[in-house]
Every structure is written in C-alpha cells, then in structure tokens.
Image (cartoon, helix red, strand yellow):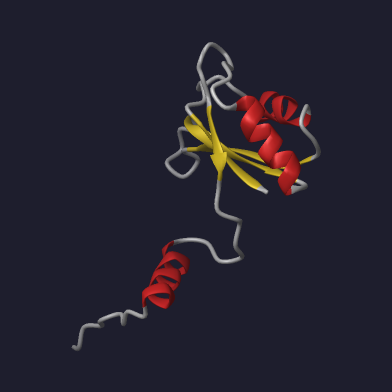
Length: 108
C-alpha cells in the first residue's frame, strides 16, 4: 500500500520516517521528495511510504494521522498505487481513457 505523508519538517530524514512506520508493519520503501533537479536538494515537505500489506498501511494511517514529528503534525493518507509509467503522459492517458476524450493535435 502506498501512503502519502505531508506537512513534514524539512529536517525529517527517510530513516526517521521509516522508523515511525515500522511500528505498524513491514516498510518496503520510503521517499522524501526534494528539489534534486534544480540542484538545491532541499526537501519539499512531503513523501511516500510503501507498506507491505493494506492492513498494515491502514493501521499506520490511523495511528500516525496528526502525530507530531519534529514539532510538526504530519498528514497521512492513502495514495494512488505506483505505476510503471511516470510523468504527464501517464496522467494524460488515464484521463483520456477514463472520460473517453480525444486529444486534439495541431495541424501544421
């Protein structure tokens, strides 16, 4: 189960986040999003935790919602499952298939 964790302090590490979630079950991966593409590496204040089972994930969401981590109450909600395709093309394909819309293309 993929879990979104928001309102993170900029000082929280992936290891700290992993320890918080391990109290509820097996953690597969932890990623805190950052600005690595523009070179600063500054964290963005949110991340994702992937847990081994849905029941463990739901227990973690219930147990950690609103918990203070480094003096900041965190937001914990269920996230969309990870997909093989990343980026805007994946989103565009999902939206078009869901609503049966056609993508307009320019003619040159």
